[in-house]
Image (cartoon, rainbow, N blue to C red; front, side, top):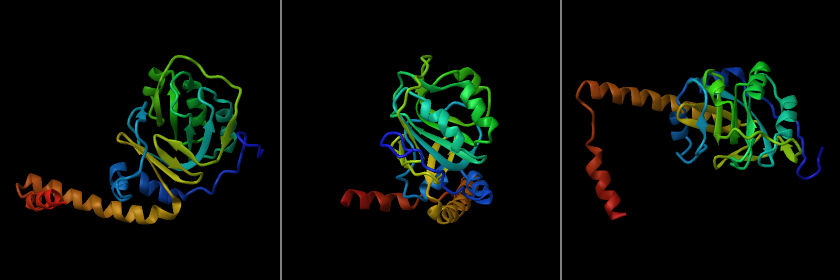
Length: 222
């Protein structure tokens, strides 16, 4: 279907399981630091027991408070995907709850990222299936549309394209273009080693802070 507001596009090629495992093993903060510290969603909260998330984005843009397109989007999802939902940040109606999240887990999704509201939080928090959302309300959704599948979306100020790699942990959610993933991974691994060395130096009483005065001087001149 290609009518404006109702477009349903095929899902993009999935990232390899090896790449997803490698990215999912690293802290989102390390990955974000290697994307100029200017990427990632803002204002989304994890509503699950701590568990890392990494998968290929299937995207949905829906009218606030309406989940018809989300139900249809499940047919576009494959095991290893993350369903990314642009609900406009609206908190008046929940876009999904425990039943839809349970179904998402049952078909092999790696997580849900929702710029909108959810409900059944007590049940979601008892499980480790990743669910990130803008907020919570008991009020249920409508099912009238419109909505679009596999189009560029915005969640928490972060643009996500179909096929992007979406990673998440307790610090938040980040989308990485597949074309950039190898470079981001390489930089994050190097930074992980550097930070481990810094932590060891703290334990040894040898943490280097000699750079602070010089940085202060440069900042004051700037």
